[in-house]
Amino acid sequence: MRTERWEEVGAERKYCKACLTVAVIARQLHRPVTVSRTNYECVDVGVLTAERAAVWRVLSHTMLFSGADLETLAEIELHRDEEEQEELRPCPVSLPDMASSLYTNHPYYDVARHGILQVTGDDNYGRKLIIFSCCCMPPSHQLNHQRLLEYLKYTLDQYVESDYTIVYFHYGLRSSNKPSLRWLRQAYKEFDRKYKKNLKALYVVHPTNFIRILWNIFKPLISHKFGKKLTYVNYLGELRDHVNYEQLIIPPEVVRHDEKLMATQKGGPPPPVKVPPPRPPLPTQQFGVSLQYIQERNKGSLIPPVMSQTVSYLKQKGLHTEGIFRRSARVQIIKDVQKLYNLGKPVNFDDYNDIHIPAVILKTFLRELSQPLLTFDLYETILGIVTVESSLRISRCKDIIKSLPEPNFIVLKYLTCFLHMVSQESIRNKMSPSNLACVFGVNLIWPRQGSVSLSALTPLNIFTEILIEHYSTVFSSRSPPNQVLP
Image 1 (cartoon, one colour):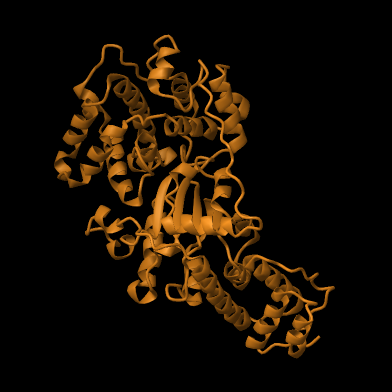
Image 2 (image 1 turned 90 degrees about the horizontal axis):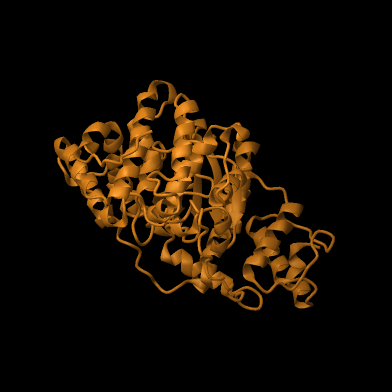
């Protein structure tokens, strides 16, 4: 059946609107196409995005595309995305003013101020979480895309030696702010093995046919191994299975778009899931509770058992391990070990034959404290470290640490003493004070509301690096009589 007859057939209701769209696209590409029910079983699809997914299935089975065809098709699909986004478009929401939290001497202030890129916490596997939000990209004439590429590399360079995860929010990409395909090809080539090796997962949220066509354009360049890292996420709720959702920095526009998509599902949005009230913690609980809770139920032990045991094991067997604290571990094993600790059962790390498991457990313990080790109250004070003259920063850190409650001071001194030991072996383990700070900064403190923003990472890392590198000086102001050291 040739394309000239599609409208006639459509009028007879033998084929759905999705099939008619195939004919329209075929005409725009100046390509004939034959489609029969053996190619695609037509259904009366009610949701536009489902129709277009059907369109792509039909096209991929009935047409052979050249590179130019795919690029044209990508542009067509992007315009269709824009039309749908107009239909689903939420009320305008003002995004946080990133410029106010950045310093104008930032080397990429002109790009960073838009908030396109964020780095926050760790995912469920202990990997650094990097977020790219298309809706924050201004029109192309207001953004130098070459500078954007340099800024991406500048940011990733701080984390690519560790395992990391990228969450890409596709909503908001339009023809007005889209980088060229030439730029995308250049970017893929410049992100060489150094960047791809430790990227463990790439989550594409709210994918459209534009993304799928783009994937086909780049398929010749993309290795099978890299392709396995890609996961399409249709709704925000699906991210909960992979990352700490509460740590994500999600633009309000993306949240509203997700709500609109959910509402357009057949039969309306699903009913809200009733979440049972949280169970009271076990007497032996180690994760997700406060330091005070742990101390009161461990005969007044000043150092939580999970910390003393992981530090002791790592001190004995992990000081010379290259990249210690930078690698992730199998999530099920981490959950199993957490469960053992929470039940008060013994844990033997030798059974797992993986030195990175106790390292991840230590980071997870810190990250899941009900209040950060450095306390919520000191968050803004610590961010102010960048305003202090370099020669006075050690003294300032010393004063800040002095104000901690004694239990927090004792545990922090214990942990920092150990990290100082790790840094002294940096010739072999490659973990300098700076590298350790990148790993532990966001696990020692975070804001009471929301997540750590990209602009906050620099002061947090500077502060943590000073603690580790100048451990003896910073902690000399207080010597609690019951202080314990590793």
